[in-house]
Length: 369
Image (cartoon, rainbow, N blue to C red; front, side):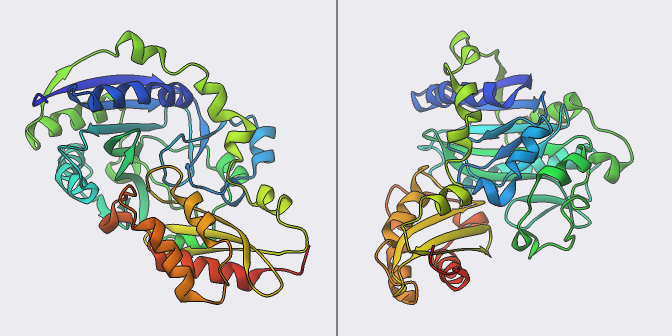
């Protein structure tokens, strides 16, 4: 593989269009093409649900649709749910060869200094890396930088608030689990969001942000970036992707209400959240003797491959919710598999997080249905 990199400025783009382009871009890296730095901004406001999220725990879907808010579930990629307003959020991603960068924590540490330089150059020196992946100022969130595996490549990526979203609308449609703010100084979800204008006193435009990231990538990381337009195939994207990621079945693929509706007759159902480095949510349908008949595992995490939490949920069936060691052994059999990957040091979930969530969900289980 060449040491040259492609720099692709996508510019304004709608979320489902970008999702549809990512497989082709990732495929070009997997097949030996240059690694890619991509920048973009969301051109249409929407609510984005993370791949592993329980949609009912993070969003009032009916209220969002009544308010005309587009809702998409991120394909493949994890992380938390977020409300992105029109032209209010910039993003960038380094699409990395997994051969060159097999370790997600090492990749994040290597590319993080470019983000630090860009912040300093933009008059945002007071912004700090905090928590598992956040960029915060005085306890308030300006953006994030995290690594994860997606579509066969390793990605170090960021989203960054450029201006304040419609927070009244956000407050109407979002459901923010109380546990999500356990480790944060600011406990209110609306007050938690900040913008460059809060920090430096002036607005920050997309082009200024993009140019700072490109400059830092060249000067700090030494990347040989060659500006490149999207190929015809990349621009076309995957057919039908826009309809797929907004379909009801896709958005509700992990859902408290769907789990409850399909729970075995006579079972007791309960749910719970546990916050480690990231939020883990569990749901259980229990036999009267405490045996787990079905489980749901969800949350704000950066795991691959995309069926990992379904595997965890599947392996829990048949275990007794009171037997912690059995729960841990079953979860570890999945999380320790050779094909499972996550940024362990930065944002990894653990078998203990999952077992804690399952046992608390069992404790919260109501009477038999």
